[in-house]
Structure formats: structure tokens, C-alpha cells
Image (cartoon, rainbow, N blue to C red):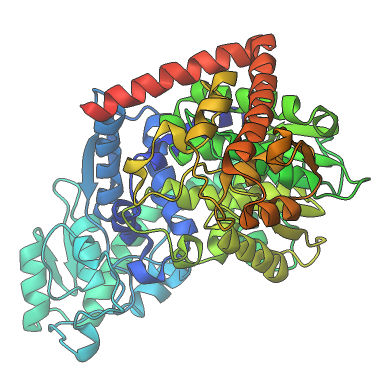
Length: 590
């Protein structure tokens, strides 16, 4: 907890630099095929990679099954421009004691010999251990889609016998210099001789196992003595055993581990929550409108919270994950929102995600991990996310549900213009229904704000121009006219008529059209339908409509521009975003 401000941003930085495909390869260490992964299993290699840098490890000595995630740490050094890469030493993995176990299983205490095992435990485990003297080839042993995805990388050398008793003898009993092994009446000094004698029948299975039990107990007896006679060690071992008992007794009805911002006094209970848009170096008027519309749908008496997801922005690579640029975006957005609707924004509480998380980081990240355990990776990715996309997008979605648990809102608003809002709403609803039955379920509303696009949809993002929409920065009042002048406005076409939509979005419900008497005289419209009817019939000329829109948008942009100039932090933020935009453009050219 004390170093959460260092550890978790490092993990987010690791995540943002790799795609889902790369992290799936590391998930072999979890003992699962790629298609059966839970979302939490992509967190494991990311956190293990983070551990290397958090601990400032120069040499990573782990089992060979961890090799791919250790190599991920070296790849991260390249991506993050860290000169000194950790040295990776991969060690042999002992077989599990049961047939077919490529390594021990944490969920099966009889799959390995443990340091705290009694002599009776060792005897029972080894005598029951799998101990073949011939290679066994069966249909179940043949590679199939259900096999462990990491099996081929579990061992350093080929072994077709896969006898765990021989494995223990070779890699534990005979590992010290000058070690010997006695089976029956014969004593051996090298493993090759032991293996040959066993396979040829000179050593029986019982003799091999009894010899192994005797040698293992010789190694463990000093350990047992230490934990029996040393008061501190004895107390420590009892604590470990108590933790195991408590973990085994844990049920699904246990208390939900989560961040609780209400009990921490950060927000009022049962509030209406809106998540600010993902930051970009060119904040748009559309993003501001979407946010305001989501804030406006709440009941009059309900507290309103605008949540700034800065750490999610980092892991999703917004603004190239530059903290200064991410903060600058939110500063510019907030200043613009206050300029557009000061009365509403007076009622809104602003919560910054990183500050909220650091108020109780352990419970927050446990909640995120638990969300990941509940959903498969495919569930969280949905139909639109691809394996080539950054794995940070998966982490961001898990964090969103963790955020909602921490906020415990009465209602949530999501933007209809986000193609993944339906998926996110479904994940939120499912998690409440399936895991959070003790909490009041938040209602989720997908809010459809009018489109402020000034031109018809382009075939690709590359074809977009500065005149396609309005921006919060670099759109002084002159652009209110120049961009509207170029806006699509086909006579009689009300299916796509930006001047009508944009005008009513910022006019306060009233549009004044000034024109000569011979052209019908001045007219004031108080609803969008009347404007559309007159425009469709030809009673309202495109030129007159655009003139009215000029005035509205000039006033709107002037209001925003003045607010940004008056706010020193917003002024700095605007400069920071422009600097980041240039930096990203320069990087893209390389």
C-alpha cells in the first residue's frame, strides 16, 4: 500500500506497451489454453513483469515455465528504453507426483513434497507417487486442444518417461557435490546408473521410493527441528497454517473486497456517475456535449459525480500515456463544461481516479482482479476488440467495473456514441446480478447526444479534416463562421443537416433567423421540428439557416475561449496539449 503510487502506474505502463496476443503467450504459465483464459489471467504476467522492475531485480531466477513472462520484462526494457535488462536464469521444473502432472498443483497438496511436511506426509506422498518404468503412450497423452498451452516449455530437456520419483532423485537428492543414493542394498553416485538400474528391474519401485523417502527426510529433518524448537519460527509456521485454514474456509458469501469511496467520505452515497471521455490531444465540442448530456439526465435531488479516469487513460495509451497531457485534457474539458453550463457544474463533484484508488489501493485492485476472475477474456474483449489491440484496453474495462464498485452509484450514464457502451453496460449488469447481490444495483442509461459532425462520415479517419467538427482548442470565434460556412447543408435534406442540429444543441432551445421582408422576414423557432419542416419545404433557405448558426456557434466558441483564457490552469493545459500533439506527430513520422 505504501508504494502503490509506484507499483501500479508501472504495471499500467507495462500493459499499455503490449498487445493481447503477446500477453496470451505468457498465460501458458497459468496452465490454461488461450481460449479458456479468464480476464484476470492477463493480469498475472503483467504484474509479474512489474515485480521485476519494482524490486529492481538484476537477475531473475525462476522456473522455466516462467521464461516467457521473464522475457516480457526484457522486451519491456526495449519498449520503455531501459538500458539495463534483467538477466534471466530459467531452472528445471519438478514433475507433480501424480500421473500427467507436468508440475506441482497449488490446489493439490499431494502433488509435491513441501518444506513443512511431516515424515508421515512424505511417506504417504512418495509411496503413492506415479513411478513408471516404461514410456506410456496413450490417446490421452497425445497433443490435443485440451492440453496445457505451456506444456512444451515446462522442462529444459526432453524426457519421455516423466517419472517424478526419478526427477526428485536427480534434481534434489543428487544435486549436492558428492551426494549418493541408496536403494535396497546398493549405493549409487550418479543418476544415469540409478535410472538404468530401475528401468532394467535391478531396483524395484518400492526400493526406489523407500530410498527417496529416507533421503528426503534427511534433508527435511533440520527444517523440522528449526520450526519446532525456535519460538519465532514455530509461531511463523502456525500463522502460515492459519492463513491456509482461513483461505480454505472462505466462501462466496464472504465480504466483498472493494474500494468504498462513500465510507471514505470522498462522495455522497447513491450518486449519479458519469465517466469523462478518454483524453486526446484535440478535445472536441462533441465530447463536451456528450458529457453534459450524461450529467443532465439525473434526478434533481441526486448528487452528481464526474469521474476522471486518468489511470485508465494511461493504460489505454491515451495521449501516449503522458500524465501531463492526460491531466491537461481533463483541465481543459472541465473549464469548457463550466463555461457551457455553469449552473449544472456547480452541482457536480469531480473525482480523479488515481486519487480515489490510492485512498485504498489494496481493496481496489483486489476488486479489479475479482472482476477479472469472474469474466472470461472473450467476455471482456467483446466483438470489437481484437488480439492485435493493446491489452491495456482489457485492463481498462476491468478497472471500470472496479471504479463502479468503489463509487456504489444509484445510476450511471454512458455515451451512445461509444460503440462499446452496450457491452460495458451488459458487463456491469451481469457483475451486479452474479456477484454483487448484497449491493443496490445501479441503473445504467445510454445517452444519445446529437451529432455535431459538420460533414458526412468519411471513408476512413485519414480522410478527416479540421473542418469536420468543432474543437475546444484552436477554434476561436472566427471558426464559428468559417466552419459552419463549409458545413454540409443540402437544400431540403433534413436527414443530415448539421446547421440545424448544432444550432439547437447550443441555442438554449431558440433560433432567431434574420432575413429581409421579401424573403419572409425575421422568424424565431422554438423547436427543431418547425425548423426541419420549413427547411424541407424550402421556406427556410440554407443561407439564412447558416447565418443563424454562425451567430450561435460564434457565441458558444467565444464563451469557451474566454473561459480557457481566464483559467490559468486551463491555459497551461492547452499549451501542454499542443506540445504533446507536436510530439506525437513527430514520433509518428519516425
